[in-house]
Length: 272
Image (cartoon, rainbow, N blue to C red):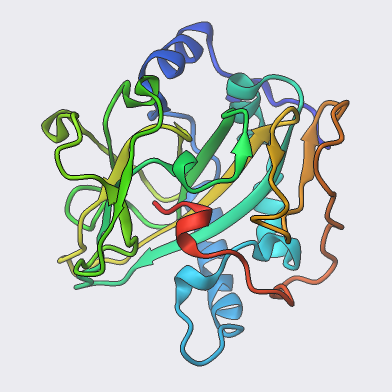
């Protein structure tokens, strides 16, 4: 566990904005351009562990076996931001790479992360760390401000889609996509969003890669349903776990490694 870094502590105004709108952008960088260049230079070592038929979206929960990712998840600058949302006691439980290569037709339909997660109560936040510059040109995420206040919406199943999700918001769901906020991040910057916020992302028709690492954090009161996600493990980031709802994982010792289990599907894990 790490001590707070005052440069990344949220102001009262930022906390209020997050509570009302369900997201935060414009945050201080987590990594410098040079530090991100170094992390990107190491990324091929992780990709080399993918098996035939797998893609980068299969890099899920590898923070459990790779200090390369675990150290990012436990970066005190990130934890300061998360603490401003979740309070003093919280844990990390998931990490996922979402990489859209140049000219990728892959999309992510409108959805809510919390719909997929067998967890209660809903007190989770996703950190989206940009490994590349991200904008409207290369498939940056979009989010509907305030949509987290409307509760969980029914999702439908669709196999006829370029979306990496086969579960998306039902047709006719009452929300205005034209009010969505466009994510614009420089490499090394991050965003925060609520697990109930409606969001998605378009294809990447550009010549630039769009890579991001999502990291999921929850307050210690949040309990996972182990019958749905039996491989669920938590890593206490800060504070004290007085609830003891969930099993703990052992921090990794090797730089690159992959879990010896198959994580739950992308739909159950949430996608961005």
